[in-house]
Structures are given as structure tokens and as C-alpha cells.
Amino acid sequence: MSLARRAVWPEARGLPHLGWWALLALALALLLTLGGIPAAAALALLIVQRARPFDFLTSCLIVVMWGSVIDYTTGQLTLEMSLLSIALVYMVFCYVLWQRADLLSFPSTPITRPMLLYQGLTLINFARGLMAGNSARYAGLELIAAWAIGCCLLVCNLRMQRAAIATALAWLCATGFVHAGLGLHSYAAFHGRRGDNSFEPVSGMVAALLLNFALRESRPRRVVLWLALMLPCVLHQLLSFTRGYWIALISSTLFSVLVFSARGPGSGERWRRSALVVAGLGGLVAASGAIGALTFNISELWQTVGTRFASSTGTEYSYATQSNVWRLVELANALRHIHESPWFGKGLGYTILFTEPIFWSLHSEWFIHENYLLVWLKQGLVGLALFVWLLISAVRTGLKGRNLPDRWQASWCAGTAAVTFHLMIYSLVHFPLAEVNSCFALALMWGGAMAMTARETTVIRWRRQAPSS
Figure 1 (spheres, one colour):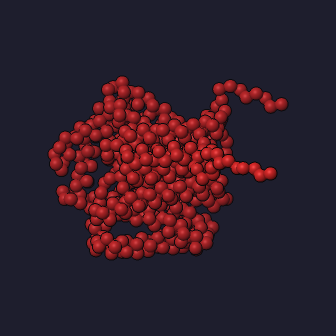
Figure 2 (cartoon, rainbow, N blue to C red; figure 1 turned 30 degrees about the vertical axis):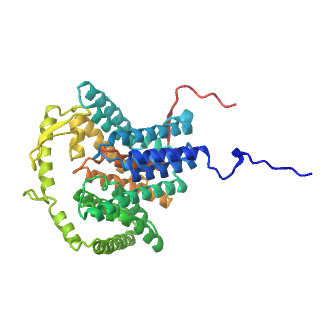
Figure 3 (cartoon, rainbow, N blue to C red; figure 1 turned 135 degrees about the vertical axis):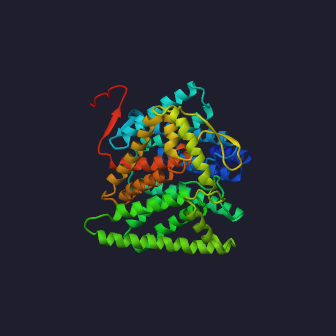
């Protein structure tokens, strides 16, 4: 007797699950609304999340990459921020599922107290700004940037062992490569400097982090691998023709070398290794720059770099120094507004009016090209003191873990200190910690360093746990 097999539609193995069709529909919707590159990036992120559902680290990494490509210069900021907010809510949901009763867990690190105080003061100044009639839109942009760095209080509860570090590091490298690709594509198309979303500080942060892994690697082949991973990020910062990026990268490199070599037993060998690593990176950058100049048919590349760097402090009006003049006018105008309320600031969302010195047009802006003055304007000297305390505490936390026995943990912690120093220098000429592009990546680095260096954790629960039988 034979049994006839009947084909049933649900048993067909070649058909994807319904969830994959939903992802495809969402990617098509993003393609129609945002364009090809954002749709492809979002689809890749969603596929990763679909493969590892409700995993907190995965959801955090998605927020890091998506937040890094937010473009403040186009008319789609509201839509992009809305999508980012959805991803952020999902990340918090994953955290709640993971932590359950231990939601409010705070490790004992130098960052914890200033971060909690800074977050609380930011909420107060957000409310003050709304009550004073400041722009709710701009206040919201500043608030979400503050919340972005506050995500380190969630990340710090992860177990940052070798596997988690490797996953986070690979994702940060991928994020840096995305920005490098966007920047190189823009430079190839326009053969010049563009101040748009193609050039953000994220790739410089990734390069500063990777340098510390290269310095602590004992095998020459792996040192070359770390330098190769750094190369696209360093080239991206070079071709941005942004002097703030260059100075910050040079400063963080010197900081990393000093922290690694320092004094003590074996310092001579460490200084020699540092010199070789930095020289090797410089050679790779010079060779790649020469190849790029030939490829793009731009023979004056290095001459342009030298001219641009030499004009860093010039004030005589020219094309190369017009940004310096703009910032001086902006600085003088901002100080007048700060003088009106120096202790407590104007509240989040406050905007200033000034006449820019190039086309003599009247501008209304919510930002200042100097992060410390921006915090002083919005949150007063009290907020500025907390802000500086927070940054110094982050450097201290990183330095606290630079001698951990695990080489990868020590490299991550030292790299976190270097990245923080990198942004402290860059904040003198821009406002990276008032935009989400670099804040989520910084929160990931801070949270990882906090998890590696904390020796005890304070857990706040709403009710007492039932005694175990």
C-alpha cells in the first residue's frame, strides 16, 4: 500500500518567515522616504536584530550606528530622530527584559555620580527652557544628546569579557568604515572640503580607540592588522579638512603614547614600540594619501593640508580663515548672552541671534561652536562645572583600567580615556556632545570601561526581595 503525499502551503520550506517579509517592507518604505543609503543601513541593522532578538548589546550597537549617521543639516531631521527614538525605546525595552528586578544598578566608578547629577540638571534645565518659552524642538535635540551619553549607565551592567569586547569593537569599526566610505565618496565627487554629514568625529574616535589596541599588541602581524583597521578612519579625518579633527587626533595620539609608555619598568621598550606604531601609521597614511591624490587627480592634496593647518590661528580675512573670524564673532555674541545669566544659564532650547561676518545675514542658532560655552549658556556655571567633572571622571575611569591583566580590557579602558581626551580637545572648536552622532558611541565606550573597572554595584529595588528557601 502506498501513501500519497500532499503538498501543503505552510510546509513549503523555501518560503521565508513572515518576519523577514516585514523587514523587506520596512526597507522599501525607508528607501522611498530616506533614500538608498539610509534604507540599506537600516535593513542591515534590522537583519542583525532579527537574528538576535531582544539582545541588549545588539540593540545598543544598532542605536550606536544609527545615531552616528543622523544628519542635522537636512530637512529630514525630524523623521530621522523619530526612527532613532523608536530604536532607543527598543533598546531600553531589551534592557528591562534583561535586567528585570535590577533595573536601577549603578556601579561604583568615578563617572557614576557626575553623570547622575548632570542628567538631573539637564532635565531641570529642559523644563526651565520650556517654561521660559524657548524652542521645544531645539530643547528636545539637546535633551536626547544628553540622554545619549547617559546610556553608559545601562551599558555598564554588561559583562565586558573578550567576546563582548570583540563584538562591540567590530561594530565600532564597521561604524567608522561607514563614515569613511561616505567621506571618501563625497571627496571623490567634489574634490574638496564639505561640512555635511559625510564628515563626523566618529571615525576619529574609533581611530583613537584602535591605536591603544595596536600599542598593546605584542605580535607584529596583529599590529599591522590594527593599523590597517585604523587607516580608513584616519584618512577620513584627514580628508575632512577640519582642523579640529586633526588637532584632536594628534592630541589623543600623544595622550595614548604617553599613557602607554609612561615611566616604570620596561618604559624604554614601550617607547620604542610606540615610535614604531606611530611611524608605521604615518607611513600608511602618507602612502594612501599619495595613492588617493593620484586616483582623484588632485596633485595639491598635501599642499592644501599644510595651508589649511597653517591657517588654524589666522584672523586676517580670507577663504582659509573665514571660519576663524565667524567663531570669534560668535564667541563675542555668546559671551554677551552668558553674562545675562552666568550661574544657571538660559535653559535648553535657547537661541541666539547674531549677524555673521561673511554675508552679513542675521542668524538664529541654538548652538555655539564651542561645547563648553554652549553648556555654560544653557546650564550656567553649575552645569559647566558638572560637565567638566564628568569628562575628567571619564578619563580617570579609563586610566583606572589601563593596567588590567586582560590585554583587551586594558586596551579598551586606555582607549576610552584617549577618546574622551580627543573629544575634550575637539569640544574647544565644536559641539560634539550636543549632537547624537558621537554621543552613543562614547556612551558605549564609557559603559564598557565602567563595567571593567567597577568593584561593587549599588542596586535600588522598589521592594525587598523574597528570601531564598
